[in-house]
Image 1 (cartoon, one colour):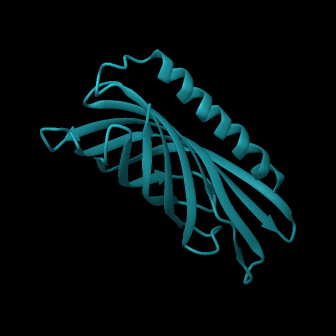
Image 2 (cartoon, rainbow, N blue to C red):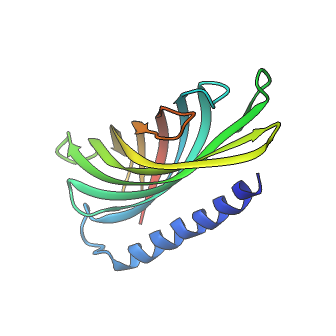
Length: 186
C-alpha cells in the first residue's frame, strides 16, 4: 500500500499550488469570482463484490474556481478508509481524482444560501490486498450530484452534497458519496 503514502501528499501539494496560482489571477473586486480550497468528510457506499463492507469513511480535498454567480469548476482528491473482510481475506480501499463543472442557484437575495448541481468525471483506483498479493484496478467514469452551500462570512462556506459515480471496474458497479465540509475562499 505504498502508493497511498506517495500519491496523497503529491496530489495535495498540487491542489494547493493550483489554488494559489488561480487566486493571484482572479479579480478580487467581484464577490462572485473567487477560488477556494475545501475539505469534506465523506461516507462512501460501494455497490459490488470487492468491497468488504458497503460504507467507508473518506476525506476529500478540493480546489475550485467560481467563475461567476452560476458557474464553477472543481478538482478533488479523495481517499477512503481501508477495511478487511475476513470471509474472503480481502482488504479494500479506494482513492481517486475528480473534476466537476458546478452550476449554482442562489436562493437568497444576499447569495448566502444556494443549491448546486455537479457533473464531471472520477478517476478511481481500487486497491485490493488479497492472499494472492496486492492488486490495483482503476476506471474513469462519469459522476453527477447536487447539494447546498451556506456562506458563513466572506471567507468560509459550509456545504453538504450527494454524488453518484458510475464504475466499470469488475468488482464495483457504482458508488454514492454523502459529504459535509467547509471551503475557504481566496
